Length: 272
Image 1 (tube, one colour):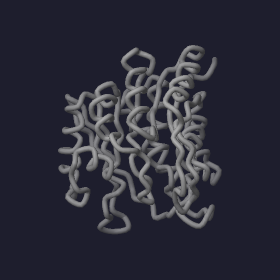
Image 2 (spheres, one colour):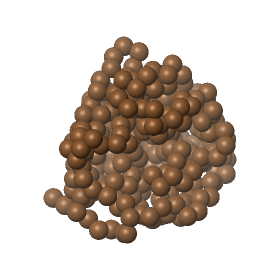
Image 3 (cartoon, helix red, strand yellow):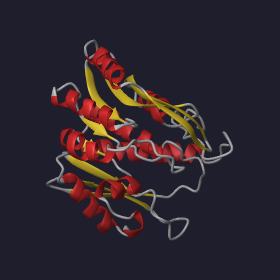
Image 4 (spheres, one colour):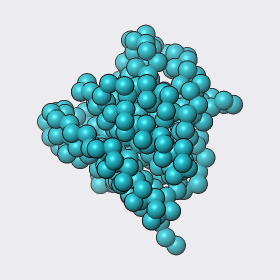
């Protein structure tokens, strides 16, 4: 018995809540071996992002090739890619068949509204990388930006479904539009996520957790989904498992006071 290997292509979060750091903790929680290709270094904490340095595209690709040439990588996720050149280079690796069960989390803007993608990134995602993805996992803000609409015009699961269908038409097998940024009508209002493919639509609802410790939820969900695909689960089952994992991680960290802003999740069940 040996662990399944998965790969995250993403940026570093110096605060440890999201990015590569959050992905590795999520992979550990699912019992898979996490490998990495670093795309960018960010200076950030629970209050926000203060600086970003995107690594050379050639170095990103060298990292990926070093991993896939040595390990049997069962699934791959992308997080922050930083600029269009990196997006297109990762897409070329996918076209070569090197990125199995590819989960694309199109990280465009941080939760504190700091841009994490240079000019041209939206076009590169739409035209180059999405057609090669098994699943793309935008949150509402990202989905709206990718579709060129105002996120304030999205007010229902039907609106999310329309966004998902536009993104699905770009070529991925599945689209998961995450509804965590819906303004809650009440403290107990559920959070809807819409998963769709050419053949099916599934709406997942989970309770809204009253907490400021939600930094890295998107990274963690896509990493959990990647881990599930690596373990051989279907996209629907892996999505359900990933949502359950993130809900438990939010609940576990709800009372934490790490940093002065939006803190990390309890990826490893420490609060148990």
